[in-house]
Amino acid sequence: MTCVSVNWQAAIGCVPVEWQRWLHAALAYRMAEIGQATLSNIASILSRAAQAELNPLRESQIIDLRDRFSITEFSILVSFVVFWHDCESLQQRPDQALIDAYAAMPRKKLSGRDVILSLDPEEGPFTLQEQNALHQWSHEAFCHDVLDPERYLYLQLLMVYGQRGIQLRKCVFDDFIRTERGYKIRLFWAKQRYDDGGFRKKYETFNLDADLYATVQAYQSLVLARLKLEFPGRADWDRAIKHVPLFRRKLATGTSYVSPLPVITDNIDLNSLEHGPNPDFHVTQAITLNWLKQIEKMDSFPISTRTHKPLRITRGHRFRHTLGTDLSNAGLDEWSIAHALMHRKTTTVRKYRQVSAELMKLIDAKMSGHLALVVNAFSGTIVTDRESAKNGFRADRQIQDLAVCGSDAACHLDTPLSCYGCRKFQPLLHADHAASLERMERYRAQSIDNDKVTGAIWDRAILACRRVILDCRSLISKREISRGDV
View 1 (cartoon, rainbow, N blue to C red):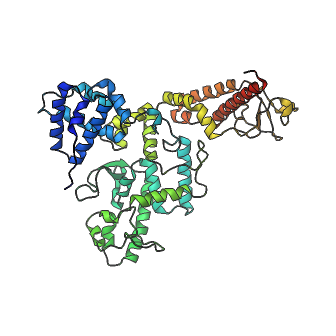
View 2: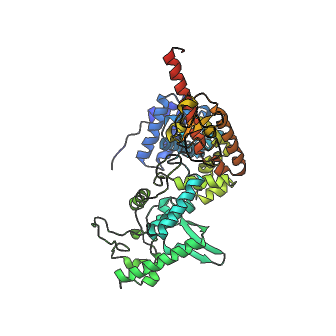
View 3: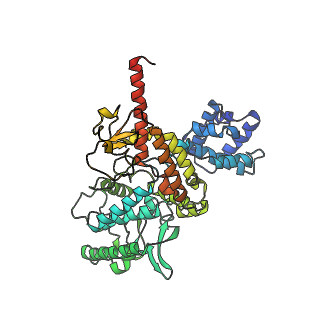
């Protein structure tokens, strides 16, 4: 057995002298329940808190503690403080107010770095426009045999239910149910290990779309036919099919690639599927992640209007973030959101409640300049005066006092609001583009009142207008410097 030293003397220095013996006792009690290595981690965290002169018993320093440690380390610290509070054998313990303060503190260090609260375009929730594009593409790709049934169903379940990949990988055909009250799906909790006591131990039942149920049943028939063809006599497949994974392991570890892949890995325990699901036949995380990477690279895969790159579907829990945000915008309470995402508590879903239309506006204002530069929505040309612009002499190509249209063909865009994203748009250097931006933002604010999700989507014209304003300021500043005015 490997022994791990625990520097408890340095650890107890994080609290006042009158509390140190009680902290020492709490560490001793904790050691009786956890491993020595885990206790060593707790002691290390407390020691570093002492070095930084941070007291975990002082409510005013909780934020500093959170910023000092990683998310995992801060969680370990919180768990220990809660244990100390619950340890009735100790006379001096942290009070309930401190425990409540720890519980209310988000584990993320800065909300601006949180992919949900910052609406990160690559890791945060999808916009409604991106969701619609992804749904439409996946259906068309499936209908045209670009996506095979297995990958199509995996992507569909991610989009619809927003669960973790490990939960979907546990699915078997028998989890798709037809009842008198409609179609249902069983989804198993993710926090269980693939062992005898935890695999598919606890589940929740959700509603299932009739078309998706029909697709699964048709796919089941195809898989059943291949099982009988490829592994005849190895199992009673009519009986075993209900326990066959929806997403199956195809090759044994170390087996070289063969084409076409078998419908399931060749295992001596194939007949075990007659009696129940077997984790040995379920697909691995590496395989499903590779599916998503390959999907991102497919031709005609949807492009994000925010990044001008293919949508990222391999990053973190984007589908969970999207479902949580959409449910919050739909007005669901925290417990309903937690149930949909299969969380035991509401603490982790509170961030979705924070992503309100008002917060989106604040993030919009804070990040407007940065996004305008990154997205590069403006593709036209800034001109100093009408004479230097293409069509500058044509009266029918003047766009109010703001710009000149460089197109020779007539268009029916909503001038000037829709013009800022056009490559033929030639904004005047000294025009009042800020007034156009104010009008656009006012229109978007009105749409937010009617539809929070749609109203919060980044509008390309607004970003283009912001870019024009930034570029005009930069050009004017450079001209003033060159003339010696500054």
